[in-house]
Length: 404
Image (cartoon, rainbow, N blue to C red; front, side, top):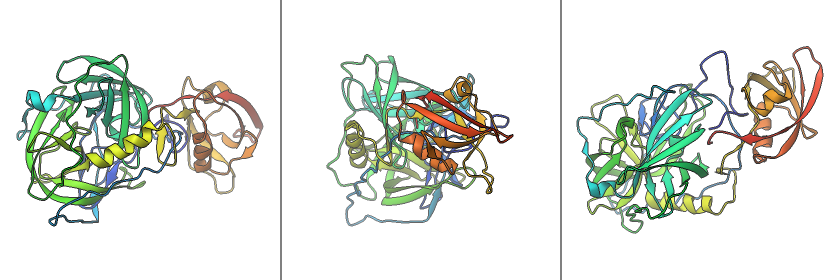
């Protein structure tokens, strides 16, 4: 989520973390910055989370239902927390591996990458895992692994080589992101299996950058249910996110594993680790079926953004939205990010944006929507009133925001 116009930003206080979580049982998804009640996300991320809703182009992603056998089951009502492993910038906490995990084998490491991000607007860092989809460096991971990132580095587990990654596109609703490594070639791709039917009691192994340690670990388990639905919400209990058709497992999925492979007994990837329960001795992990993930990848690769899919990085003005005065029409500004178009224009905390390109802005959500229809590099004219009621106007060029 990039810092911009959809969520409040409070420069004087620690920004509120974004939401990331599914629900059907108390779980902790490894995706964005959702924080459901009793779930530990499988991504590894740093500390501060800035509240800002950046703009981008989104699209509805079609989610393929998991094809399960007769033993399939579908449960609902699980609350989960999406919490990637996070740490303050420059002091990323590298948690130790879990007792039940073992070092991943060479075979389990082929086609797998470890992802590290800097969340520049939040003063934080994050870490997770991903799959290599092409020899030229296309990477699949969870959206929450890179949400809010201003820079992304990716290390190929089998070679140790590190690349800078660009964001091809994201689907926050389905928790899928696609990256492209700069200058990559000849990479080994992950062994994907989109044809097999997944059933309860199937043996599986979750592999990932557990705890953000920078090395892969493996945790064996079994499938305990399929076609699951979980809902994750932010720390404040708002902005619930729901993921459907998930594979449930008792493998010890932990923070940092987000975006990593869930292997079947033949060593093929059947899903990507996304969330895990927290607060009890019995771990419940959740993974997005690889077929579902690849359908969204295809949509992102089309280059067409929609309500859920953002192509590339979103356009960024650089303001946080505060609590609006019911008596005042417009988007109340709670803070302005240094070095952004908003600062250059002279916007200040306490101002109220009233128009964009001459069109009336009546709320913060409308401002986010309007700016979301633009791309980085677009020029827009912002109209606002200051705290004293004086009117102002300025034309700015939107810049690239953090990964959304």
